[in-house]
View 1 (cartoon, helix red, strand yellow):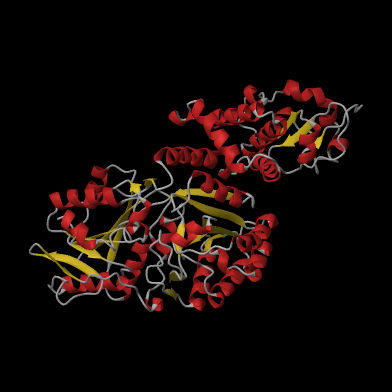
View 2 (cartoon, rainbow, N blue to C red):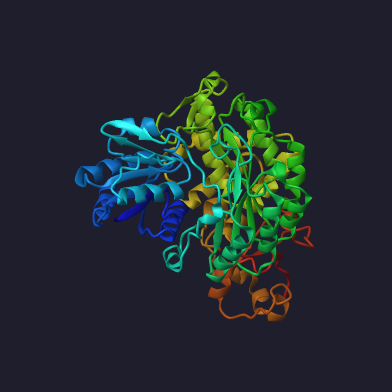
Length: 581
């Protein structure tokens, strides 16, 4: 029997861990499956053409909010030209509404509900034996027979994760060279947040720890650049996660680990290790979602904000671990202004990224059943909320634009120096961060930027105008600096005070550049070769004393001065000495 597993990833760089688990489990039990992956950006007819090149008896699709509608379209097309293929759907998007989907879509033959390794293997075994997989009932498998929907109605879990083999092979490393490697050391979640599906059963199970350490070493040995853990709460069991974090800290590697961590469960131990781990080794995602107690109570979540600040602030200040924090727009009782307070609370920590998400009424989630909050949402996946009992659509719409602006400028980290300075002013000044970014969003909309595709320099020019309109010369000059170092001097514009560097401009300070003895006191091992090399790496610019001081430049003179910026950041900015003979 020829079995093919597929999914439509949201981007090319993504890969499906679920399909590889199914394949590994099947192979361990004598079944061979092929995997073919696509993206939602590919034309349906191209996907259909590729699928029908294969000789298929059973075709399985992993379904998520980002691909469900397109997957159903592909299913209908496949059935239209290959009606004998058995279609099996699985994944979180179909696990809690199997009957509804089977009734709506007659071309679906089976739905695997919950974790699919054991259930899918049992279904394939039944089909190989000539049975329909519905009688006897296979836990987790729902399907149709003669127009009737039969089988199991439960979403299943694999109790013993040690029975699931390692999902990656040597061949995968070639195929996934330029893609994100997903991995998990546990399944389930100890919490029951009502906007999420992971805590539906309040159970957490772990893969064997020694095996996990061996697999992480396997990734290192194969030169993987990043391993993204999909554990819903990585730090929920100290006996499990602490040895893993010690391994990450102590094992020499250039690999990066992405972990989702619950701030309420962080102790001084976790904070300290994230403060001392080698820079860039670990990045954490911290889901706060809201700091409003009434909101948190409604979604069955508990946050102790003072405790979270105590745990997270030192990690951000240490600068070794990238910290990504999350908020959700549209939660109960959180109107526009109260969301702004949650935003300000998180912003006060100056995380490397502050992600603004929008509530989705996921099938199977508690919030989907909360009629009292008068949710209006897109009826199609991803079921994003359009308004609530306290947040009208116009506010949601504006926050969508604010999220886009904030993502472009703050979260991109291209302007980290600029927004580090602005952040300090907002945290300690009269204007709060939410109001400031609302002003920026209004200026963005007033210029009509939300309706056009802007190049990087267009966006930089917008920021420059915005800062000058605010009377913030320091922010404008720091933007010049960030533009030079973020784009290695390749993005320039007269409109932001960054004319193209020319030999003539540099020759104003020719005496400095030709005096290797003096220049090498600022630039170690400096030798003068040719103007082209200097022009590519160094930029001379004027700036205020306040901006120079913020950049850490020493010995700033009272009069005019010229600052030299190394766009490669091999040396810190410095003031070019004058009157060199």
